Image (tube, rainbow, N blue to C red; front, side, top):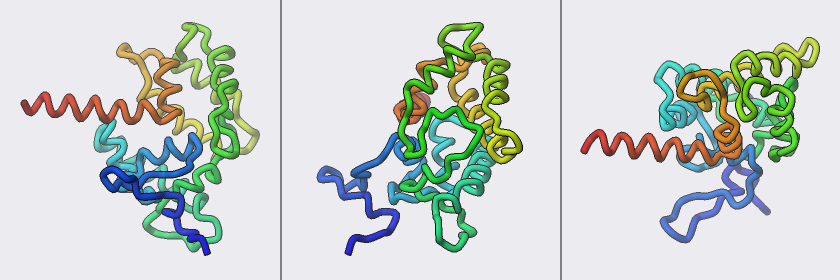
Length: 204
């Protein structure tokens, strides 16, 4: 009988013995960045460490960890008794998808390129490949489903975080390429590498 544990979709990598996922959708890969020990479960401490790894401040990382894990934990653990440790099961992250969102991820956790491009074709009026803060807020309002207050809050929190991570040096716009890579998980790893490299140089 196959195991139903969160780590059942993980195998031992031949080189180095690291635990790696065998089959993940894009949304799972994005969330798996915060699974620091790669066991298929993300605890608040790991969410905190993940944000710190990409250069976020202690306060921002702590608030993000509380908000994210508290909000998503039970949705990714259907049929299970609530846990005060607020774990997020990576394999079920698509179950935590909320309303009033952009549709960039579908209900199966897959990235939808046409929805991503639509964000900029409809809302990027000041710059062709970037969103200003005002344009971002306008998009969020247009995506709102009536009386879906949780969805409104979740979308606002997610996009404001993305804005902070992807804004240009002048703090004016959210850059298109950075945003796409971030949603595809690649930029998170790149940010961690850059920060790690910068810290090593500072020590030297």
